Image 1 (tube, rainbow, N blue to C red):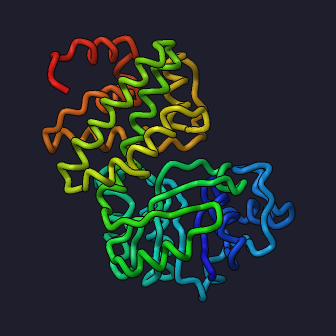
Image 2: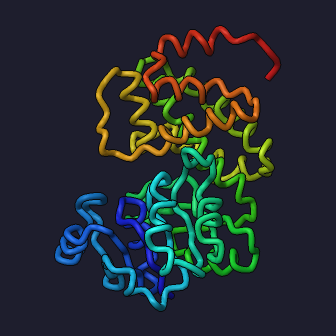
Length: 320
């Protein structure tokens, strides 16, 4: 097995470390200085400190070094995915491209698989998503993810290729469900972080998670997703993890909002851009998504937390 991971952030690095135990893996970064640093130290101290590289993990900054790689994992932020595909189109064309990012692209309203299909139509797109933190994967802790691919046979091949002793992949052909589950849960995680940061209590968080899950289903099912996908790892599972852990960047952004603290702008928080894209899409579809609307207000600073809570609590009473 020879796999290449594009993107030396925490998650891409963790996947490379996990997969290197069963074959040659290349980890690509566009930053030559970062690549040299990782080659010397055999770690990625900038993004995933404390995780040594296995011997079979090679670090590169030139994609000309991957002629024998059929499967490429795209571990770049959602809002940078299209730009990465365009920049390296001749190298990536015709290969199996597995997106490892979660979100909806601003402007187009597309998920990662749709962006791959639109940008490189001769590639075979897939998506790897689900409840996971990079540090857990790198340490070899048990983790389960969803591998989504429209082609069943290629999906089976990818499932076997990318599963490890500690990383268990479940397979689906429901691209829409997995894309939206992974994207929308980040929006709800920001809201949950804000509630806890403001000291509004665990009961309020439970309510937001539950009603947020209803919003996730509302949009996903309207766009053709399957309900069982949203109830699985890429939907409910990822929601539960992201809304309850300080390791989640989206949750931590929410905490900073609730505490009225500054948040480190250098940290990529996919849910912030996704909230804006989802709110626009919901308006076009005439879908009621009040929690997403509130998070959008947080992101563009047009709404305070007390105003958001007042809006949500003043909504008409109805059946669940």
